[in-house]
Length: 112
Image (tube, rainbow, N blue to C red; front, side, top):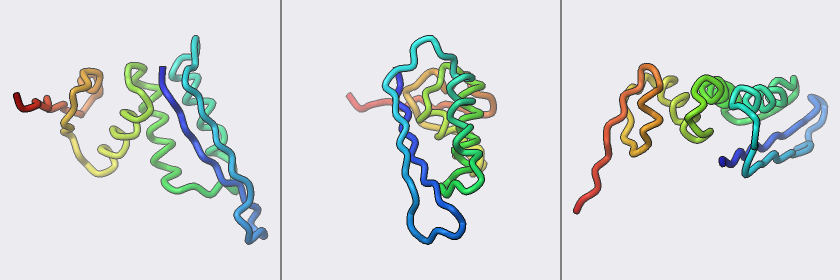
């Protein structure tokens, strides 16, 4: 199970007000592949008048999410952010990161 919070703000170019906000959230998406979920979440991001911080980063994260079904959306966002900044190493306890190409997981050890 994973949670996908997405907040969208729709505004017409001539409209100076904030427009509408739409929140999509799910705690589980049984039977749906990451590819299907990513495709569905990309559609609202393609709306012409959509104003959203880090819109392109979210699109990249959804591509990572679709490609690596073992990752949750938060991990996919971390990988997309790393790629954008040229970072190749991550401290993580999450073994699923090992499957991502060009990312090296550094095991985080906790003190005794």
